[in-house]
Image 1: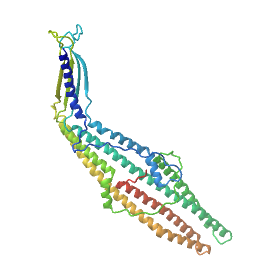
Image 2 (image 1 turned 135 degrees about the horizontal axis):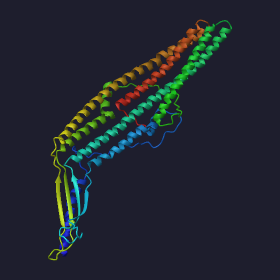
Image 3 (image 1 turned 90 degrees about the horizontal axis):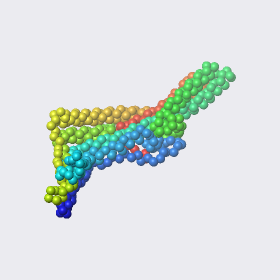
Image 4 (image 1 turned 120 degrees about the vertical axis):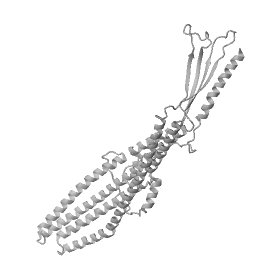
Length: 455
């Protein structure tokens, strides 16, 4: 009897071996078809604190936006979620445990009455055909990489928008300063015109003209303040601040505009480093992996099922009844390949073609964007240099000469006013073109895919 019980134990051990051996082998991470195990994708946000308030420099604004912008945080959270998928996609299906009772007589429900009555325990495990798990993991890893590149692309767009809005506000601040300064100057002109009119050396129309130009400046000041408020609201949205939070920028910045480099070099760099293009390439690799997986679906999946049946009672000769052990092997039969697997292969092939065209289209978009932004930057850069080194100094000299001539009645008041208005218009245009140049440079940097670090 003891020998029989030992035999039963040996049977259980053999069953456990048959089940646990393939499970242990299958638990190892399966290499992708290119021989590399895909790494987990991480897109954690390194920011830990908000930038304090006060005068908001451009670098501080970028750092605060990267830390606080909810749109960027959404992309980062999605990338983190996608980074958890590859290991799931490459894992085996969960094994199935079976518990039951077989061949129980319904008259007595006794487990030792009939020889075939058993208490059954079993376990089954499905094994996908060789290579399928690796392709699934590779597909998920490429999709996770797409999400990571989307984070980088969103970061580039955010930095571009912060720079653009910052320079818009800076330009409006300088314009308001110029308008305020010229209001004070026109008040002086009004006072001079009134004095000359009172002593009979001036005309009433000069006084009225000066007052009219002063009113125009007041109207411009109101318009600029309204525009600045709108830009301030947009800026606060980028920084995730309250909409009515005040924004204070520095009163001066370096006014240097460096050369941009050749268009061919910028395009080459963009094709190598632009996150949007890297994402399209990862999508293309994922489509290839899906096509390979669809082709492998012609091959069957396998299922191993091991069971052990415990029997009670005695044989007719008085010995203990032996337990039963079973090992089953099954596979699915792709009998409907024409309607399923073949259609899936055609679908994945068309998706691959679509991804190839999407990559080509994105590359053309990037080239066009770089060309347009480079043209905008060079135009604004040349205009800024012309205003700074030529037009404004010449206009300032003309105004000084006009003012001196007006004091001795050699220049009429209308020409003096027009010259002064021309000067402050040039000054405003200078700051506008400087702002446009920096905005174009920010857009060009984003188009190329350069990602400065502002942690």
